[in-house]
Amino acid sequence: MNDKAVELVWKALDRLAIELPSWGFANTGTRFGKFIQPAAATSIQEKFSDAAQVHAVTGACPTLALHVQWDLPNGLKDVPEVERLAKQFSIRPGSINPNIFQNQEYKYGSVGNPDPAIRRMAIRHILDCVAISEALGAPDISPWFADGSNYPGTQNIRKRIGYFEEGLREIHAALKPGQRLLLEYKPFEPAFYHTDIADWGMALLLAKGAGPQALVLVDTGHHYQAQNIEQIVAWLLHQNMMGGFHFNDRRYADDDLTLGSIDPYQIFRIFHEIRMFEWETQTTADIAYMVDQSHNLKGKIEAMIQTVCTAQELYARAALVDHGSLARLQQECSLVDAEETLRGAFWQDVRPAIQEWRKSRRLPADPMQAFRTSGYLERITRERSEKNRNTTASYA
Ligand code: RM4
Ligand code: MN
Ligand code: MN
Image 1: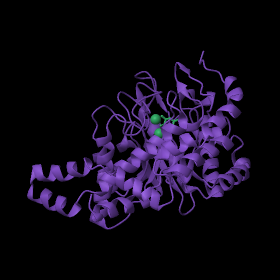
Image 2 (image 1 turned 120 degrees about the vertical axis):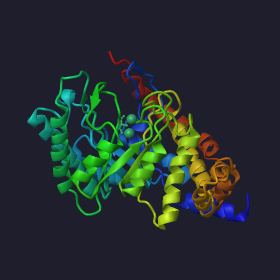
Image 3 (image 1 turned 90 degrees about the horizontal axis):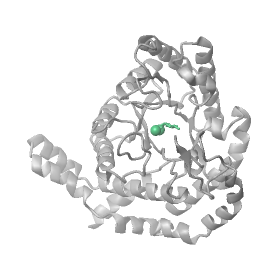
Image 4 (image 1 turned 135 degrees about the vertical axis):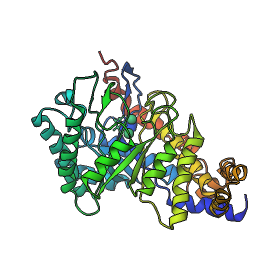
């Protein structure tokens, strides 16, 4: 790789920050059961501590996404404790995730529920999240709605659209300047007939209706097979509506596998669309790159380190695309050469350049090995295994 390419890689890595999810460090499972990991985090303090380990070896993860019901069960009252932990571990609170899917009341939906009292309860919770986001100085609020129905004819789809329009407008009205409402879509699960915000078009229309601080969040696992995700990203960029990502990979449904483990070219193509947009418009897209994975088989911290390194590798490769020649080749419809310009960047081995970048930033050249030799995992396994033994593995 020549000096210019190495410089492009370094510059790209300097600006790529990846947000880790607090829930990715705790014991989670499938709908059939949980495999308990003795080292899993059992408290918000332990989640911050684990995230800090990933940041220490990668230098790329300065923020931690929080799920309010799990991490701030007392809402605003827990803000001072979160601030204390953020300071102690030098990790800033990241996106604030409301939980409008777990309470018994949400059986038939939250903001889309036919019962006005339950809609109110959901809106109130999200408004609390807006206040928490403000208090923590963490400007992104990212709700995911499980709302939907399982059988044709059982819910009025259009009425529920109206409830969402109304509810999201009210939430948007509470936003302070700088705060952003990131709307996440998902085609199915837990609802298996209709989901109220099922795809990017619905999320886009609802965000536009809510107001200028509402944007769309793309969870890479929330699409049907074969859907062209980079085209969705291109549309959202074109509309200035691209707010953030939840990174993970999938083979079948919302599998939450490690980013790039199944289809690294897909993630590269998404990064390429963003870089090409930035090159063309000479702007920097304000996008929150977040991970949404909870591993129940792989070690949680190792899986996060692997994810972050993969994101860095694919982002660095996207930085190597020669935008000037690609634009010219596209214009001329030189199909093979245009495609090879993209593929050529994808097939570069950027790992040596990334290693050099790490050394220059006083980071370990091999983050995984640094973590494995740190003794951290052995220590937390000793400290936490007793607490984790009491976790229920069964869902029955
Ligand atoms: C959903 C979605 C959300 C996440 C929940 C727990 O599938 O991806 O982002 O908060 O899971
Ligand atoms: Mn998600
Ligand atoms: Mn998901």
